[in-house]
Each structure stands twice: as structure tokens, then as C-alpha cells.
Length: 394
Image (cartoon, rainbow, N blue to C red; front, top):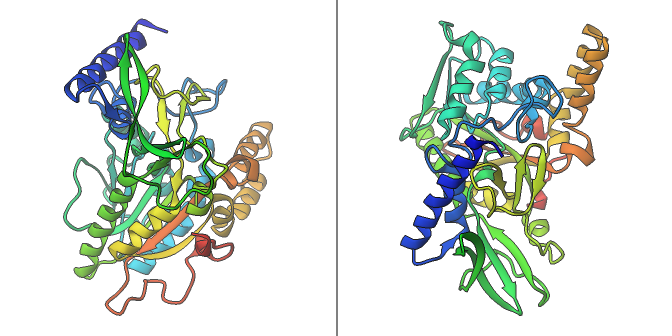
């Protein structure tokens, strides 16, 4: 561990220890996770360490994990087909991206939708990532036909299309542990200078009953669902002004019936660092990502209850094929058949292969209804959900 990383985790650990002391010696895991990820200057997403990029050994590597846009530009090009359709259906020319990472997806969308997008707004809590995004999007800095903004707060009304790739999984979760038939909230305490798990009996429960009496660990997602309600409220306020919108979120997760399956008894919290994963979020704080899988049923209900229509829900692989990924791969093969291009296409195939990202990652879409409750698509299916829609599974 370098002096820089050692100093960072030492300072963040001291901050967390002080927060624990002020809270009486116990923090809920959602509070701990929020501080570990977002404490200004120290948290994982708030410090200057490189976080995402290419796979190990590739030029520009040295990151902790790779997201779909970094894996292949074909991801953004395929997604652009759905976003372009949504821009037309809602008669808007704006995109809002939450958690834009390196800016790779923004670059891919702006290039593919050139002339259709007049304003692209990024909402990101990380100042370090914001600087990297600005560098990535430099080619658009002086373009007169498109405006790129960074927003720290949301306006009362949002117009346009919302995009979030791997943003929901980074939102803090509560941990619930059933031990000997009794439910506890799992939190964090300190013991001789180390963070340790500490459970307290609770009235909180998972959204569905977990069959059996065996010990069981899982998460609930109040913050992600509150985020969904907030986005819905902003889009619906815009719709009242006659400017409709839609939202698309891509992440790894399951519908409720799979998420809270009796056999999924160890929870889904994972950490990522240097393209390795582990299940210990209490160590090396600030130096690794902490995530949990998404309960897409909860996200769908939060959006619906706020007033949005669910456009569809399907696997990432099916969504990208619906959006023309196979055609894009064929065009890429025709244009460039060098060994380097073949390697890039092999990377792109991971986007849709079932044992890679194609099945684990899901896509969910929402839209603002009109005055009589119809979405901008009417009775038609949105492009990405034209086949293989799994909304019934939510």
C-alpha cells in the first residue's frame, strides 16, 4: 500500500471512528457505506484515486473495475438507438446522466446522437470524476450546437431523458440479518481500532417474507427507491409544463422474487478493487467500491407509485440486441478486420453473453404519462423492450 493510499484510508478511518463515537458507538450499515463512499475528499467516490477503466494489462488500466461503456463503445452506440427514440417520442433534446463515471457513456451518446441533443447534464457527486469527465468530453467543449453542464442539485422540473448506468448499485443499503429466527439490523462498531459488525434487534423487515427459519442476510434499498421517487417527481413536474420525459437505468440485480429467495442467504454486498472482488466492506475503507445488487421490483414500484409508467424490464443482452447491437458488430467487422479490432469485438461480446454481463445486468425504463394516462409510446413497445420484456416478472 502506497503512502498516499495509507494516508487516505487512515484519515477516513479516523473520520468514521469519530462518527461512531458521536453516534454512541454504532452506525447502521447504510450510514457507514455512505460515509465510506462519499465523505468529501476521502470517500471512495470523493477521492482522487483512479476508479474505473480498462481491464488489467490494457493501456490506460490501473483501475478497480470496468463498466460497459469502457468495455466497448458499441454499448453507448446501441443505447443511443433507444435514447434517440425516446427523444423523438418525448419531443425533447436534453439528456440527464446520473453517475457518469469516466464520461465514456456521455461521449458515446453525444457522438451517436449528434444534432439531436442540445443539452447534456451530468449529475455526479465526485469532483475527481467530474474532472475526468470534462477531459473525456473535451471535443464538445467548444461546440455551439450542444451544451454540457454539471449539476450539483436538481431543478424543480426535469425535461428530457434520464440515463443511469451502474448508479443504483452504489446507493447505500440497510443490512438485515435473521439470526435464530430474530431479525436484526446489522451495523458497524469499533473494537480495538478495527471496524466490526454489530447487530441490533429491529422491527424492520424485508419487503417479502423469507421462507424458513435459517439464518439469513439481505439488504433493503430505501435510498435507491427514494432516489427513484425524486427523479419521477422531477420528470412529472416537467410533464405538467407540457414537456415529457423518460428514464433508463442499467445495473446488476434481480426482481424481488429472486432477490429475496430463501437460498440467497448471504446477501449481495460486494467490494471491488483492482478488478478483484471481496465481501469485506469494513477494511481498506476509501480504497474500494462497495455495492449491492438492485431490487428492480422496488425500483419499479417506486417509479409507478410516484406516477411514472414502466416501459419495460429486460436483461442487458436482450435490450442491446433489440437496440441493434448485432448490426453494429457486423458493421464494425466489415470496417476493420485487424487482430486489434477482433479483440475489441471479443470484449463487446461480454456485454451480451449470459455468463458475463448479458444476463446479470438488467435494464428498466420509465416514461411520464400524458393527461389521460398514456405514455409517449402509446400502445407501442419501446425499442429496447420490443422482445424479451420481463415486466411480468417484477
